[in-house]
Image (cartoon, rainbow, N blue to C red):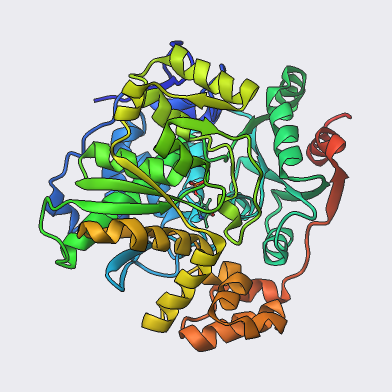
Length: 495
Ligand SMILES: *Cc1c(COP(=O)(O)O)cnc(C)c1O
């Protein structure tokens, strides 16, 4: 069966998976969604015997149905290789009654690697399939994690280059160091004087400029996006939920067909949407717990049916979830609206213009797969400390938000629960160590790294080891009004 992709905001022409990957966003501003969610065509019990790569093939062949087997195998084997520090790619670790699905064993030690290590392969294969001759220029605005994962993924990939904009004073020192030391002739990192929203707005303006697109085309370039709204990021994320079910079976923790819960620390709603797709493909998932930090716009939405972004933006110690507009929620809205594009557009327009929308009672009924939960800063830190005291296992702040929601809500159901663990504690060392004991606060970042190794017994990941002494290779700074000029200068276009 062949799956095509359509926009959430109009009933225009459908595109193939490879075209959707190249475009990123539909022309009407909507997101691409599959015209149906395919059912897995392997038996559940077979999953127990599949490797990560084999599982990836079983999932991706269904969603990316215009890719040949050879093309998919090339993408999968190129992405999930020894860049990951474990052969299992996404280990499932049982701690204190729950199963932590560790998604941070890739190059930049956060779960973004799960999708961004394969996206460059999917993108260049899509370009080839569609006869694109231009070099693909990936433009990205980042608040920290995505930028580095995208840089690492696209570095030295033939036929591509990547330009990342980050707020000069808005990312952590480790995050900045990770980006400005990135190797690869086709990588460019630019700090802007402005905040993340300025960076994001500047990038969107370039994507929407017809004039710039023409100038680019004449010089043999075209833009694409590595943003989490690209289905080339969503589809690879379904894989690890299917894989985790196979792992539970293989480890004899569940019987075949037994239902499980999933808890996901959520920001842009991409990761949990992938779990929802896994459920719709036939993975026996009972409830999807959507865990938020103090920016609990999604918790309120699941409780009330009103999505209201008009609130204070809170800076927390789980910064990758500090988000008030969860872009991927639009795909769920479209589905619970009965695939009504006009209704979806109306709600999304209301969000842009009035800052809020309310779904209908019928739509709210379709949300019964989801339960919202959240953790305060205090609860997040206590969760890290409790787990460490009890088991010696150290988790990062984002995972701790989910772990708190497991303890507070999912545990009592008695259903076996997978908690998505989205970052290594080494990525947020200071917050993690401070949670365990405030006496560590006076230490430098790298002293904390060494201390973490000492108390956890987990080796310092390569991603951290290499930035200790790495040379700064990127030092471009520009004003937020000069982003386009900077892109032109990087690409050698006339200003
Ligand atoms: C991006 C990110 C999240 C949020 O994931 P979404 O798909 O945006 O919901 C959670 N934790 C970490 C560490 C992340 O980098």
